[in-house]
Length: 284
Image 1 (tube, helix red, strand yellow):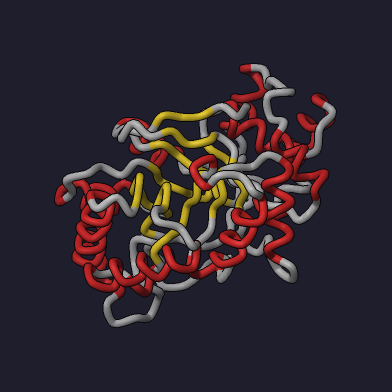
Image 2 (cartoon, rainbow, N blue to C red):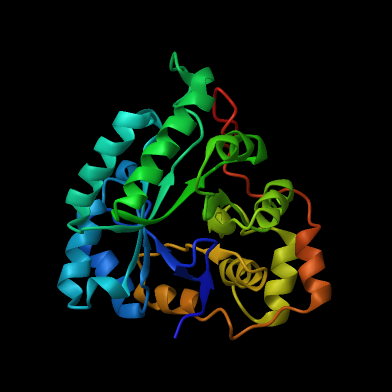
């Protein structure tokens, strides 16, 4: 049985999920079905991933009742706004072939870089959030949250919100823990989810992580997941390998010492993916 975390709205979410971004190339439906067979029930998708229909097909094919799954999707950053948010959610419900979504997120706080409304993000966010609140009240969403929101984005949202965000999904991994944003979320009862929890291979040569992985006799990717899990952060690893899927579920088999936790918490920045929600371009 997976550990579950209780959100600020009373709903529970699994502490380990399956990230579907770029994990479903080729026969995407089969990859998601394998993840379900491996025990994953939290499935994280988004319109921009182009695989909501694959997720729906795998859930149906599994034969497991819909209510046993926790499905997350997201509003595309270029569809921010009251009316577009409502329309996009209805389309996502159709693609996922479900009456409700367990968690629906604003994917980014600003539209894509270079758009004329890039600086109008405050209004777009609050209008979108109002739409999500109404769809939640109508029973089409269980929980509502955000992704890639930093404290100033959250502050703007909460100044106008009737419902506080339940989740904030951020790029979080050793070397890029965004502690200021994490602390702000924890202070306001917002649960953290980690996307890119193993740094997309950019941490493979890190000396600190290599030393600790050798000490605990695990791989660096597994070490990253264990660290985040031990810190109380939901992890969303992705893989097309069934054996790796199983390994990524076994995060309680290893317990890092307090000393080693601090080694990871205080390591220099490493592995950042290069995208910041307030920048007009991607930095690498």
